[in-house]
Length: 326
Image (cartoon, rainbow, N blue to C red; front, side, top):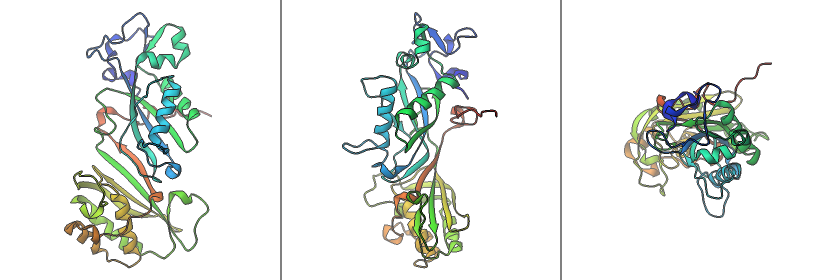
């Protein structure tokens, strides 16, 4: 849903202009005249990236990260001397990819209008953003960013939205290539296992992950103190043939390296190093030594982050690229 149709998406919802000037205010009017007197505009981004050349998504000193690249692009586009802080839905490690990372940032109407000369020259201040403005933000950011990161959608959201704290579910996919010889295509996005795997045993073991469990056995020893209790509502290994396997998992919460340790355990089961029941036993007994090794980062991809329906975030017709008629 375009944010301009949602009165709650901006403090200025009650101050819309007549048809023909919707989404802007004359410069003489006060854009903070809404109920909460907060003039910030919050924009959510849907982001994809190849994590190969990034030292993770979270800002770190002296190394390239997804957050830093995006914040630099935002500052350049909005011509801001101050840092525009990007708030991601969560962090990914070095080498991990994303096709559905979500992040948000705040901007003032003046900063936003300054990036669009047409409105600035007409003495308007952008408040509620239409599809064309949001699409142009994506195009402009992608013109600044390097080729291994892309902003695929943008949407204006209410100030109560938060990329991290409002997320209700995250979905990851881990890709495995299981054949005798390595591939020359997409080798940085899949885990190559040359020995034959017993896929049936792996699939049987994966089903034990469904439901609410303590995942202490599947978190790294250097994990933070976050609760290990996670509710998994999808856990399945898909076999596409020709050695192409995908492990899909969705949960309300993940502990550090949880997906990669689960995959390492499943691969051990597929190789016959462990029994399918060993995964259930590790869940019950909670010992890290009872689970398998941590699978490589390169096979992991953050596929999707879900939010409450009230935000209608990146649903069809929100701010994806419009279909072009041929």
